[in-house]
Structure formats: structure tokens, C-alpha cells
Image (cartoon, rainbow, N blue to C red; front, side, top):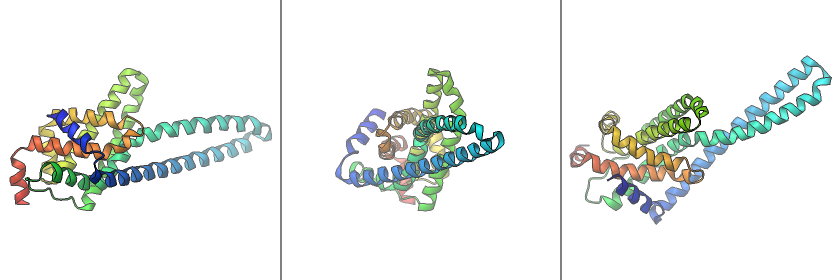
Length: 244
């Protein structure tokens, strides 16, 4: 069931109806990453400059050259750290993008694969954005808690991967389910199928962990979870959608 849903999502990924959404989602993710990167780099540069001036004033002119060398090394380290930070933030960024384009992606999947089913109802824009921001902030919080475990080599990487799988599975399944249910009902349905959703989240986590490829995460994650939701919800979805 799960592999069939994943293959169907991949099959539709580069179809003509998906291409425009793909370009928009990649563009939005790239803009967000650039803005975040520029903001963090500007903050680091300002802090480094202020710190160097303060130390030079405190110690005296004799410290100018050593401080220049030290802060140059710190700037290089910060740049490398910024690159790692952008990768670290990618799941949160794709969560925001999914909130913006999730309904458009889900509607395409429903039209192509489930034309006989009642279509889902798009989430209000405010609700979609709020849910996306909530999961993005939760992602950052969970990842910050998981970062210290990265020092444990393989064990830390596994913890980070499982945290990503939980968050990605949770978000994309609930976005698919909320087209047919209230947010509270969607969360309850996700908890009821928690093991399956978490396992599916591992496939999405694998995609989001690959640089460049992770830019298509919103499309793959949404399409994949629409298929999974259809299989898990069964005949109930028709009556739910008809009553909305």
C-alpha cells in the first residue's frame, strides 16, 4: 500500500499539471532560504565586527593583527556553519512551502487518481499558513533538541532522521486529511494510524535529506500522503466530504 502510494506520487511528480506547481514551490523555497541565509550572515558579520572593535579598544592597537586573523577564521567557520544551518532548516522551509501550495498539489492528485470521489475542500489560506508555521516552528524546536545527539555519530544521525520522519509524516498527512476533516479530526486520524504515518514519514525524510532533491519535498510529500490518506480513510471519506 505504502510503496504503491510512493510510486504514484513519483510518477506524477513531473507531469505537465505538476510542473508549474513544482517551479513555484522550488522558487518559494529558494527565496526563503536566501532570505534566511542573508539575514543570518548579516547578523554574524555585525556581531563579529562589533566584537572585534570592542576587543581592540579594550586590549589596544597591538591586538589589531591577531584579532583580524582570529575573526577571519571565525568568519570562515561561520560561513560553513551557515551552509550546514541552511540544510538543517530545509525541512522547516519545505513545511512552509507545503502550506502555501499543498491544496493545489492535492487537488491535482485527486483529479487524476480519484475522479469518482468527492473532491476535498481547500483549507482557508489563514489556516494553511498557521498550520505550516506551527509545524515549521515545531521542526526547529525538535531539531534543536536533536542536534546535541549528532555528536553521537551514527546514533545521533538516526535520532535526527527519526525526528524528521515524525514531523514530515505528521504535517503532510494532516494537510491531506484536513481537506476532508476539521483540524482536530485530522489530528485524531493521524494518531489512530500513527505507526503507518510515521513509516511513511521516513520516506519523506529520505527525500528531504538529499540536497537539491529536497526542493521537491512539498510535491512528493503532499501527493504521497493524499494517496495514503485515501487508502487509510476508506469509504468514510465520501460521507465526510458530502457532509461538508
